[in-house]
Each structure stands twice: as structure tokens, then as C-alpha cells.
Length: 177
Image (tube, rainbow, N blue to C red; front, side, top):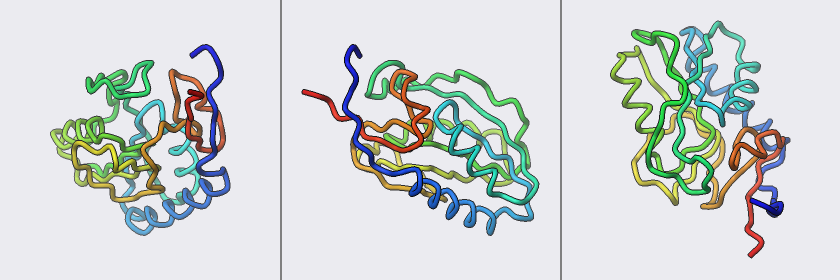
């Protein structure tokens, strides 16, 4: 990754902010009296999760799980690794998984299956972005921010080889070639 890639803005911080507010309102309607566990998938969802929970005005828990299927490439390797295990027991809890992007669906389906085995009271998914053009495994998204094109995205927590997470907007990486 010697030279800097060309970045093209897809969603501005203002559009992201409005979408996070909309999702928070939807989640509040569903979970306001249930005290859910908000489970962020590291590392990509950390900004989205932080902004989302600050807009929720009911008791909740936050935990994280680390999963990886990309490494240094722009294509998923297809091999899912748990990089940080779940720390909170979830049996009989309302669990809302917070995901930055649903791409092929493999990683998200793997996680949802893993969590179902622990018998939560309910299990739902909130995704900031969905890339349906690349879907290989069906994944039900209960709360969705944006549907995105089949391009590699960075910013607002999403990275390429651990870079660009800090950008406040969502960008498409456009190869120079």
C-alpha cells in the first residue's frame, strides 16, 4: 500500500449522524424496557456503537467480541478468527449485535450461530451498512443504516489494513489504476 489510495466520499458525517439517530429511535422503541446487551464487533463497529449508545436513554450493557476475516487484504479470506472472545454471559439476555458492515454474510452468520448456542432471550442485528451484492450467506438485518455498493469502504471505524478508521465520513477506496 505504498501510495495513498484515492478516497471518494459515500456518506458524510452529517448523513451518518442522521442515520444513527434514526436507528437509535427504532432501537428505543424495541428495547426501551428490556435492558439489552449491545454487542459490538471489533474493531469496525466501535465508532458506530459509541455514537449509537449515547443516543439511547435506557439501561443497557456493552460488550465486545473480536472477529476477523480480512487481514491485510481488501477481500475476505473466508476464514473467520475470533480475536477477542465474548466476556459477558448472554444466556436469557436480550442481545443486539452492532456490526459495521454485512458483506458476504459469512462472518455475521458465524457470529449469530455462535451466539444462538448460548441461548439469549432474543438476538437481533443492527448494521450500519449492508453490501447485498456480495452476499453469500443470508443474514437477517433487523436495523439497517445504509445499503452500499460493491466497493471497499473505509472511515467511521471501517479500515483497510488498520488504516483510515479515524475518518469521520464513509469513503469508497478507488484504485488509481
